[in-house]
Length: 228
Image (cartoon, rainbow, N blue to C red; front, side):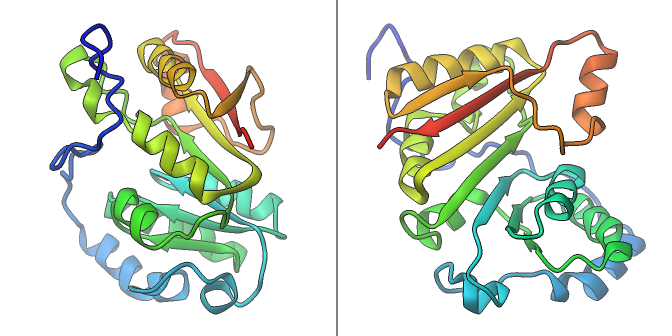
């Protein structure tokens, strides 16, 4: 690791998480999870197998940190030919997404209520993802917390391996510090081609994006294309 670039450390650090698991499950959340999750949950073990997990061999899009799921649901509705696998540790957010999806009878929206890193590391095979979405991740804006940001050298390498040839990583953030961090990490990594400024039309403008715009912050859109 270079002394001049302490955040450009390729080695994962044990015990460093990109999220803080703080929430309380209400009776409504518990009821929604019990009733709706079984229809959208992936198997608890085994490698990603689209036909076994989703009932068909379709492109798989992984959304990391799906929050309350508005973007994931919108993508699933506008891309019925894809299967959307959401990963989110915040159980109330998962429950809210499932409740929003229920009236649409969505059949291509899937859920892993847990940490993305073990799933990516241990259960997602090489070249099995069509795209990865990372929308408004926790920016961890303080410099001493930079190691907790999801985009690091080792995650860029991991995602590049898990994506199919020509696969893309979409990132959106309303924090300039995080955008600068991503640009630095990607430039140092060298395994990606970056396109800026292309906002996907299907993504709703609510949640963290709407909050950031109300606060006067600019939303940065980054499309990272895996270099073959």
